[in-house]
Length: 462
Ligand code: NAD
Image (tube, rainbow, N blue to C red; front, side, top):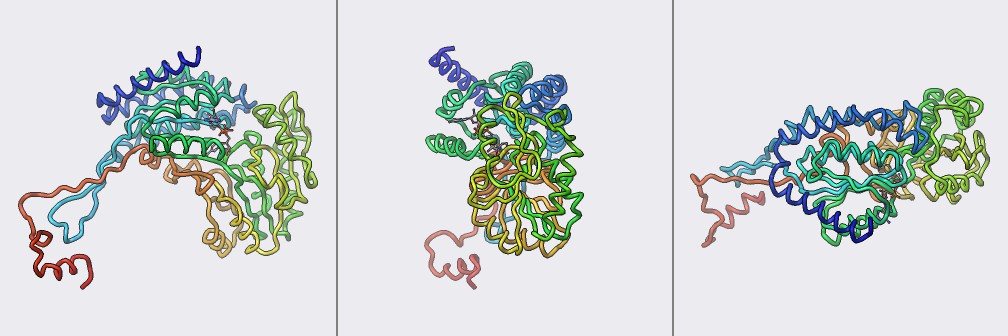
């Protein structure tokens, strides 16, 4: 398709969605539930294709392929609770406003644009999509071009399941994303890196469109001396090396109490061997790096510090071994950017206060992990750091609790979603006040005379 043809068809698509939105079909609860159930059926129908696609795109083992299909558990949660979420939420009135009633009435925003990344290419389109549908919106989807097999399956699934006037998908790369961003939407939901997040926010500003930005960053993982090192190592190795480290909330680096560092390193080495064998290149359970560009960037990070495990790589196969590195300083290149690959730098601290200060000097992380049994340490870290989410004594699992909002803070993101938080994100929470005619107090009307005293009382001054 030529660029102008593509632009015309995009404009047509948007027109159709705007008309559909204006027809008032999407906000009905029955319609929303029907479309969510249709989405559920489609995920079940396509599950083998989804797993196969992420295998093609990322060399994902079948088990980790199910992380994509697993989005269905959030969908079930949404279907179960939606009837309650759509209801008006009662607000209390101050005495001065009586008689009357007030409530918050969630209403759909309109037409939403959802742009996704390549690392969990199915899940990170479908999870926001269910929020958009649940809240009664139309949606245009733009998956990542860097996971082309998944993008194709998504396109097929969407075409099979939805009227394009309600939900449609546009495949393509930067050009397609920019053509979409030039249009006016009622909400933009973007998942990706910080650099593109800024581009999205700038484009949204032209139309004053609200945005949700789900970005990345360096998520620290603190390991205190008071831990079960074996269990900590099992959990860290799993969370860091699944999907070959290409997980936005993977622990990016370890900050370890120097007294337990050697023991922790031994436990991590042992776990890597237990999970991926003597030669991880032949393990069926290790994903591959998504493309040559990412591979070259990651291999460039292996030139620093001392390699304690792994380090091997093969460009033809885009394989990088699960790698542990120490001898790293805060100023090294590997500590300047999100690693987003199977390389884990290990830094140490003597004083927890110094570790906290080091974290706080850097951009606010998407996730923060803390391993310790010590409640005082837990409180100290929780109270003195900030992060999109925190998980104590485990990693990653906090994002699969649908009652918890998932999102970043500062440069790791803006806004949040999951479960009811997705519903709220894709809704406008409209305030409503309703007054009866039967009583009309005189205190606010001129002539004011000596009513000022009464007013002072109302506002709590006397
Ligand atoms: P990316 O920012 O490069 O791309 C994301 C999307 O933006 C893609 O669909 C791409 O086509 C589009 N895009 C790329 N360049 C663009 C441009 N110039 N203008 C407009 N659109 C453009 O991100 P990625 O490499 O796909 O994903 C990796 C990043 O995403 C990491 O930083 C990771 O931490 C982050 N991430 C965050 C979350 C989260 O939930 N917070 C989840 C997954 C990934």
